[in-house]
Amino acid sequence: MTEISKEYAEALFALGMETGETEHYAELLQEISALLRENPAYMDLLRSPNISRDERIRAVDAAFSESLPEYVLSFMKLLVEKGRVGDFEECLNEYMKLYDASKMRVIAKVTTAIDLTTEEKRKLTDKLEKMSGKTIIIENVVDKSVIGGMIVEMEGKIIDGSLKRRLRDVKDVISR
Image 1: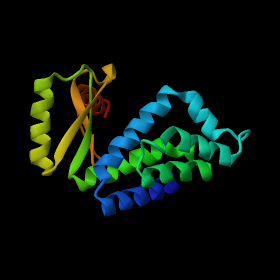
Image 2: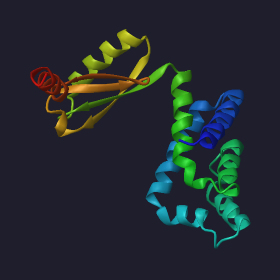
Image 3: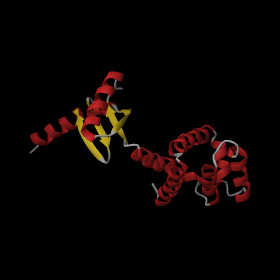
């Protein structure tokens, strides 16, 4: 994460707060992200030093002027103008952190050896919500090296209840 991406996201979020559009902006930024991933050639065009900055800004205008509100369109143009369009995903991630914090939502990255079932996710969500007092959104990541149990990362904290960690602890005790 760059400090500049954070500043850009904070500026757009502040504008979203003023207009009451933070949720709408979040949705739009996620749609733009999907479009940019689906069309890597467009992103290459927006980054290309062989195309004048004005032409790249006009390309953003042509693609988005009908579908984006003024502030989001200006945000996209600013990224192109300042040569920061490659930082779009970082800006999006920072914006979403601000948005989630404003809604008292927390993303909990849960690493397990296999996918959690819907029921397991619900139970874990309930437990984490009681623990944190916030709305929890589970992001399940599968890593077979965990072996069993889970690792929960949220709000800068890690709860490692994995079998891999427990086996490592046993090994440490034995090797003393």
